[in-house]
Amino acid sequence: MDQDTGSTIDADTLIWIKGIDIDSSETEIQAIHLRLLTRHSKVLQEMFGIPQGPGHDGSSRGNPLTVHIPWKELANTIAWMFQEWDKAELRATPSVLEEKYTMLLATSRFLMMDRAAHEAITELGGLKLPATRRLQLAQQFTVDEWIRPSIQSLVLWRSLGSLSSTEIDQLGIGLFVIIAGAKEALQKYRAGIAYQPMDLTEAGEANADLPTCSTHDQCKAAWPAWWWRNVARKIIYPDNPIDLEDVVEIVKAGTIKGMSNGCKEAVMEKLAQVEWNKPVINQAVLKATTFIHSC
Image (cartoon, rainbow, N blue to C red; front, top):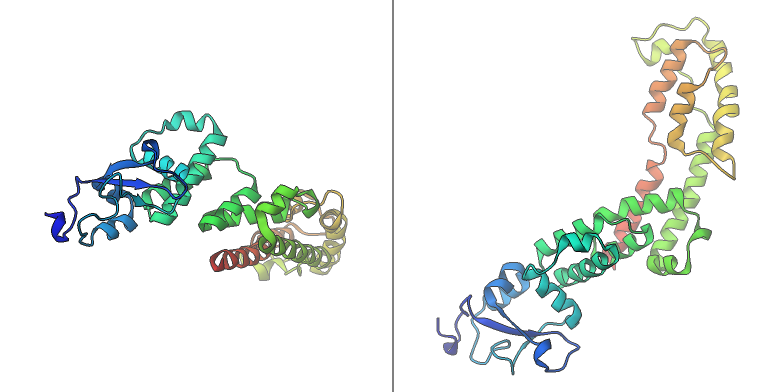
């Protein structure tokens, strides 16, 4: 179709593009077939789906289409479009892979490039990035699937005092406050579990398949004493506390003198249903997700 009459541009037309921080040198302005641009970018697809008049942006080297992205990021994306990346080589150099796919993810969000975003998230997700860095990227590019594992790692396995200044900067004040609040909530939650062992339900009442306990009063007396000696102290021990999810194995392996086998089986069934850390982590993830989406 004839462009001069203000019509849709042919897909084989070359579009000249540049970034926002460049001069007019030949190496920093590149011509790309419109077909390739619109195949990958919904933004450019919609833009060039509108009839263009003569001398439209991108029609010549002297009148390039300015994409509001730094040239380094734009050139990186163009190379990806032309399939110039050696992925095996990139995976052998994680720092380079992180840089290139982070730039691609930034560009893909701006230009609505779904396939590029999916590939970037997949490749970055395969890297062993620190939880603070992954949360930083999750916040910058709204990647929800990275929020839970990062929050869980920081709340359960890192003390606030162990975070470096770089890691704190990566989190930002908003996420730092959420993590600090979750750690405080977790301590209260752990203390509640430690000091209040679950009620010992009589075996036959808990599960009809279990035998009725004839010494249930004795079992009820033995259970809290054993819990305090073998579990509660390890939960609240300040230097090396156990993870709550280890409680099931500790009880399973323990010999609880004075408790019948049926009542112990009933305890194990109830313990298997406890969510342990999940309520605190779920709340922290919800707060972090809400915060990230509000930014």
